[in-house]
Amino acid sequence: MANIVVVGTQWGDEGKGRVIDSLARTSDAVVRFQGGSNAGHTVVVNGEKFVFHLIPSGALYPGKKCIIGNGVVVDPQDLLLEIEALRSKQIELKDLYLSSNAHVVMSYHKRIEQIEEERRGEQRIGTTRRGIGPAYADKAARRGVRVADLLEKGVLAEKLRINLSFWKNFYGLDYSAEDLLHQYLEYGRKLKRYVTDTSLLVNRLMQEGKNMLFEGAQGTLLDVDHGTYPFVTSSNVVAGGACTGVGIGPTKIGKVLGVAKAYVTRVGQGPFPTEIQGKIGEILKEGGQEYGATTGRPRRCGWFDGVILRYAARVNGLDELILTKLDVLDLLDKIKICVAYKYRGKLIQDFPFELEYWERCQPVYEEMKGWKKDTSRIKIEKDLPKRMREYIKRIEEIGGLPISHLSLNPERSEFLSLH
Ligand code: GDP
Ligand code: IMO
Ligand code: MG
Image (cartoon, rainbow, N blue to C red; front, side, top):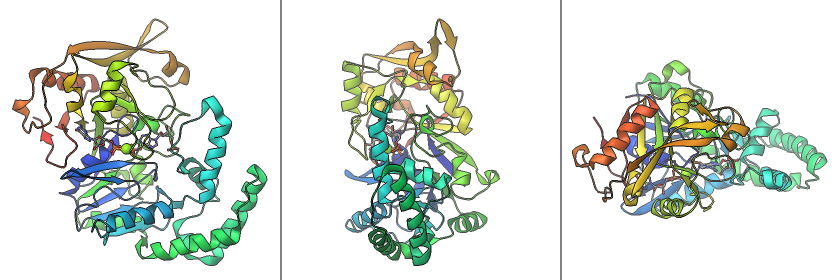
């Protein structure tokens, strides 16, 4: 089906990269619409691991257009390193396109983020330190540097003058405008061949009836409007972000696919109602290799949370769900699913709004026996253990949406289709 948006339904790292890689086979183009190099999307092909940060995760299939939309914040240094790393593995990005309107993450954004995180102390967000928040803040404050500016010496010089004087007054930052001008013009020179009007390109491709895949980064609960604010990223992660982050109308979207991990993880600070402390958390962390693909930080692990699934289904308008990493639960004797929260004795079915609730609510669990079988090589639905099928069915009931595919190992291969 044409024009599919893929979004994470939890706090990121649900396996979006692996899902995009699988769907890319039958797509013509993959488009990133938000986030930046805070994302780490893993694809494993014949045991070889690729981690994508800015480049869409369809890049491993030759001939697919890889498009970075205007809603992405682009660190040119990271992008050039990623292009180079792929080239060293004989992957030539002949069809890479970069929006001229995308905002640029500047080196001073990373410094600003560091200062702000340090000042927050205990209340720090635990960001990836990729300069994402300050770059989006400059965008909203209308002083941001855009990709097109890297190609215009006069415009870039003027923007640097304004920005550097602002940040000097604000945080006492002392950057040489001349050095930055030289450095970023050089990035512009290297990236020029990819720069284009990506909204025009994507709309033309859609008119030609091409199959488009829109790749979300992060996860719904990290969305700046709909996530666990302030412990969020700085962009609109939800499916609607694909429209503003690419320059397409909502009527053009054919399907919204959610990706959920069979348990939940979170990196960085912030509320996490179903977090597990102790041995089972360790089993999930080690079994699922839950270490950040961008920062290497250990991910916090918890039980599957049906309340956030229902919420993600609502704010994204999910049509279907893909459930990943079920194999990681193979070893467990008992598996819990959170079906509601309890707050001051009251049962809550819908995801609450305030930090106070997220921090103090108690998850209400249903417990199931584990299937205790290696499922990582299973290819067809009828071979799934009965208890695993029950687990999947219960998630469908709680979320109120169908699970169309399962992923039971990180390797590229067909997903297991259900129904
Ligand atoms: P993303 O940010 O949503 O793309 O997810 P990440 O790449 O950050 O993290 C997902 C991790 O789980 C990666 O290491 C994947 O290789 C791995 N993975 C994906 N699907 C599966 C699966 O079904 N089973 C297992 N065991 N690992 C998986
Ligand atoms: P993918 O696309 C998991 C988290 C950070 C931090 C918060 C804000 O791989 O799923 P930021 O650097 O964005 O300002 O950090 O968001 N975060 C992610 N967590 N996966 C990601 O991306 C993330 N991108 C940002 O850990 O809590
Ligand atoms: Mg990731």
